[in-house]
Length: 62
Image 1 (tube, rainbow, N blue to C red):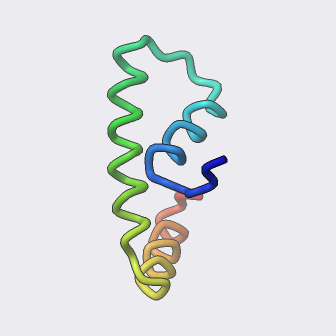
Image 2: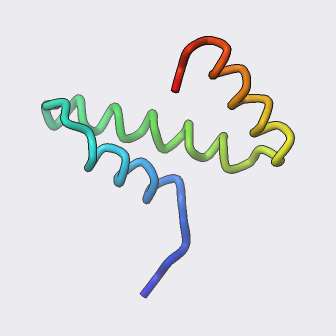
């Protein structure tokens, strides 16, 4: 069993838990967007990640 966390896995799991109804085309677009965002986040150092979380918190994004 593969237990590696990848941007693809994170994007799929995120969308699986979403309650928004998407068309197949919207789903694929959102999936690709999330995959890129998770890939970017996974490349950050712990300090950079903390800064991103702090910035999002200040903007009211939870």
